[in-house]
Image (cartoon, rainbow, N blue to C red; front, side):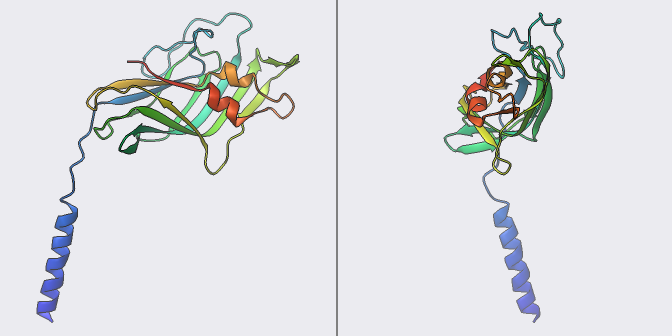
Length: 204
């Protein structure tokens, strides 16, 4: 009986040792993910890389007013698969694009990545002014029509450089584009209008 126990213990130790002899994961450069409500040139949005909130001057009259809130997951995509950026991305941003918020910071595995995949699980705007569709002024809660289970995937090609490079990426919701597609009665935005509008680009 003692011999059997000894052999079992040895087998367990060998299995644990084998499990610990896998390929060592080498972390790459720091990856920062920022978000803004509307960072396009037309909106005059801000893309300043300041930690936390960055408030700019008051927007001119006629600009969208209110906020947009989103919950999402971000993955870096390369030839060898996708690597998640640590933690969920959550933020509340101004519709006029006058702020930029860092939502994620991580040092993922050192691999080549050529795209960023963002899966949105909730996108909801609180519009207080500046939105008119078909001659109708739209205010209040506006939501993007997102499948509850799967979320809504936006994937864009982004040059993330060498594995050791530290890179900042901006997720630009471009709200002025997809809010224009809202149904003024149901106050919902079609998923395809949102997917077409969102931009993802490298900042540095």
